[in-house]
Image 1: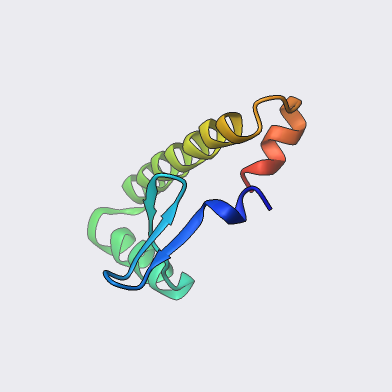
Image 2: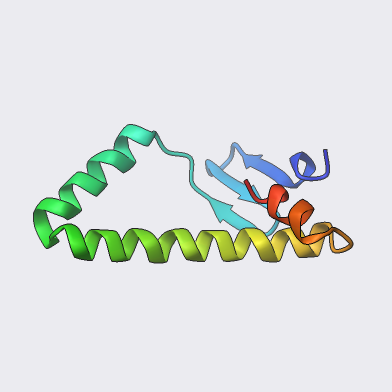
Length: 83
């Protein structure tokens, strides 16, 4: 419940917010198409490195937010907050 209260939809400008971060809502097929295009354009190794960096940054932000919202959790409980 504490996480759901942090999600805001702004119908005036179409933005989505989670805590104080602007978020994107997109189809997984679009992300798959981007991944495929990156592989064709710049190669599998560069695509893998960029996907890893993006995943790391996202996970890091999730961990920071979990610590802000639920700072008294065990490591296991805090990890479960992000996913």
